Structures are given as C-alpha cells and as structure tokens.
Length: 411
Image 1 (cartoon, helix red, strand yellow):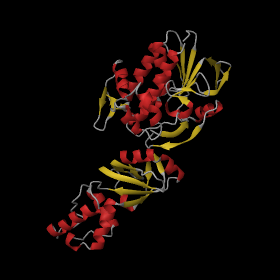
Image 2: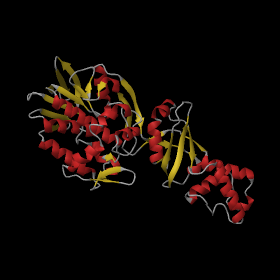
Image 3: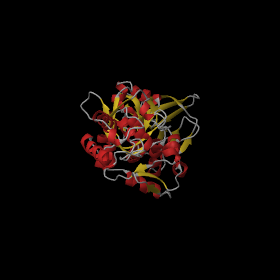
Image 4: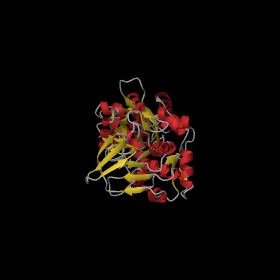
C-alpha cells in the first residue's frame, strides 16, 4: 500500500474500530480516520451483556461456530478459518485484557465491565495513529474517479482512497450500498422477546424454567424449535430459548406480523405417555394430597398451579379425584401448551438486525465490494446475524479484521 493513501471508516462501532486498528497497525503510514455520528463511539459495546460486554463465544471450530448464525454462516466459514474466537481472545490478551468463560460458553472481560473493552480499543486506535472524529455524521458518499468523496452534515468534504462502511443497521449505510449497485436484503429485527398476553403467564413475571422446548407453528418446511432456559416476563416470554427462536424465525415471524402460535413443552424430557404413567403412579401412591400443593415435576410451583388451573382443575382437587379428562388436559398443558404470539418487544437495548447488504456481492476474503473497487463493508450492515451469546460481536471482529488486513496487503 502506498504511504499516501487515506482510509476512512464510516461508523465507530466494533467492526469499524477493528478494521481501522488492524489496518493502522500493519501499514506504515496510512491516514486512517473513523467517522462516528454520535457523541461517543462503541455505544453498542457499552451496553452489551448488561454492561459487561459479551465479547465472543468459546467455540473454536469454524464448522460448529457457523451453526450459530441464522444468516451468513456459509460465508463466514472461510472467514473464521482466518480469524475466529481464539484469535479474538489472543488479540485482547496481548493488550492486557483477559477474558473469562461462563458456563454457557459466553466470554466476558474478567473485569465484568464493558469499559475495559472500550478503553482497549480506544487506546489501540490512539497508539496506531487512528483519528477518531466523533459527532461527525456523514451526509453523502460518492466516488469520483478512483477516490471517494465524503460530505459531512457540517458541509466539510473529505476524500479517501478506500472507504469502509461499518454503519450497522443505519439506513444511510443501506442507501449508500444501493447507490453503488448493491442489493439490500430487507432489514428486519432479530433477537427479540415475544409478547404473549395469556392467563397462564399472569402474575409470574420473573419466574424462569431451566429447560423448555419451544416451537413455532407455521406452514413452512423448516421445523423451528429450540430447547433452553425460558423467562416469564410482564409482557410474555424471554430467555435464551425464545431469543434463539426469534433469530431463526425472524423472517417467518415478520411475514406473519408477529402473530403466530407457539407450542411449549415445559418438560422436554417427558412426553404425553411417560407423564401419564407418572401421574397414574402418583394417584396411587399419594391419593389424598392436593394437586396444587404437590408438584411432582421440575417446575416452579406457581407455574404448575397456573397450568392446572388452565386445565380446569380445582385448587381443592386431590390426586385420587383426578378424572381421565382432567389428566389429559393437564398433560396437554405441560407438554403441548399452545400460546399465541401477539407481537414482539426489544431485547433490552441490544437489538440485532436480520438483513442488509447481500453477501453474494462481497468478496469474503477481503470484505471488498464486488460492485465498487475500494469500497469495503464490515459488521452488521451485512446480511449476517447470530444468535445471542457473543456471536454477533465475533462476526464484527472477524469482518473488521479481514477488511483491515486486505487493505494493508494492497500494493
């Protein structure tokens, strides 16, 4: 790369910073500028993981890693062979930031503070001579000959030899991509909770179940289901199982305006027949115990009581009095309960977008546009999204690293 080249990164998020510091570290004398529209860069890093920053996930096999991406997994397979979670861990460790792994594989800084990651990136950018310009929203992006012209909302005009667009789900980024001939897959939400007003969930906000199977009922060929922890909220359902289901079912849920039926098996290790035998045995062994007071399965007692009430079983009912009809209704509620999703709600402030720049139009060895030489894309602006657990940040680190490395290798 010639020393005189100017690189401008539009977007001061994880992908934008990583592309800039990767380029600046290895290239002798580039002028590298990050343009951030907001007052502070790395805003999404700050709120991730409840303020702890879920940096990545402890999955070091690319073939397994890509299975956590509802969209973009195929394109990321080769990318992860070059920069994956193991490399992310090493990158931060070499700069004094150690990561720790939690039981579910999520990785956080040992400090449990997102500021640790932010400070590391800001320090590295300063060390490598990257210019960070906050409060610098871009109004337009054009290509004039071999160079790019970037007009800020202040009226200032900058020129660059290479541009990295790392604007996340900002609509301007999609507009610029279209302007240069790119196809935009309609951006829609991913990773959200379900709004389910249902008497069975009433007054249970805050109650969680460690292992639940949830399945979307739809006419498509793909069976969409997840097994994992579930959290009952004031508005409906959340937790890892729901968030993962929302990611894999994002398009289908959007097409149905977030009105679909959800089947819940509260006891995924049981089925109707095994549960029937268990209840018949209980009827025989503890006939005089009240059903509402004795929960023989691994469920919170209040949830158990709400499900029995939904099966029209009286609080005074003892096990010996349980009729065949009531038995069948109780079993149906426990292993095949049907709930109507009537909308979505945001997952805290950590939203993820499904859709973006079509991956067919990107060279995934370099992250350069196949439509416009010198134009690169990184991060969430691409049609890539992962489930919850650090996977979205990993795709940001990887695509940013690829873009930075590619520009460094240019002659």
